[in-house]
Amino acid sequence: MQIGIIGAGNIGATLARRFVELGHDVTIANSREPETVRDVADSCGATAATAADATRGAELVVVTIPEKSVPKLHSSVLDGAPDAVVVDTGNYYPRRDGKIEAIEDGTPESQWVAEQLGRPVVKAFNNIHSEHLANEGRPSGTPGRIALPIAGDDPGDKAVVARLIDELGFDAIDAGTLEESWRQQPGTPVYGTDHDAEGVRVALASASPERPQDFRA
Image 1 (cartoon, rainbow, N blue to C red):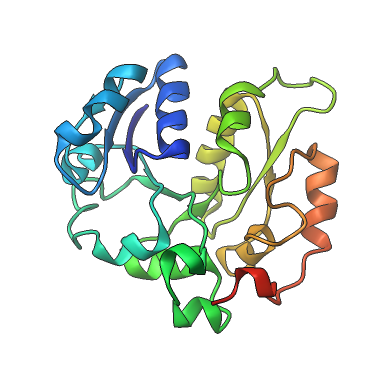
Image 2: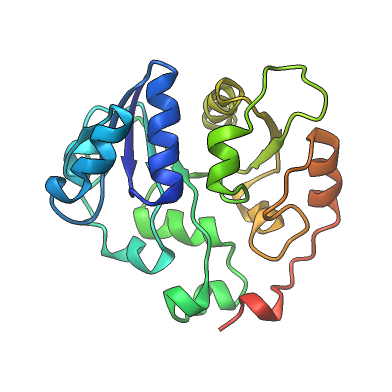
């Protein structure tokens, strides 16, 4: 699969390395020139590019940048990948991102991201630590295999992401629509955890839509 990754932080770099190991064709970019992401790309076998070039022709695009940076993406950045599944791994941290009124008022974070990008997204990879994503994958059927929630409105898009999650060594758990993606946001019972499939389902079901004070501006 041809995969474009926008963002070369911990999650972006980890996904790039793991996807390359699995045989995917990966191009990675950040908000600056390709040379600034060259070391990350070389270390994992990906190709460094501009954001527009990273997404051009991609079947899957991973957006893994701070929430505050999402509106700064050029509006045409996804034009070269009109049919790509778009994955949002982001989380809203007011101390880093500043106050985003719509999210503070209750709009789920990934729903807000989708509005900024003008494209549907699948929320995934936002609740796992990067080192666990890198090292804790296990074969399907392994007892206690870590599970990851995914939320989105298109069943086909979610199926694509679920297959990749399985390839990476984790179980994918359908967390509902994008409107329900608050169930996996920071401060919820599933956030930052390594639950198995049943544990993720229980955590999602017990989540509250009220944003915890620690994650409010």
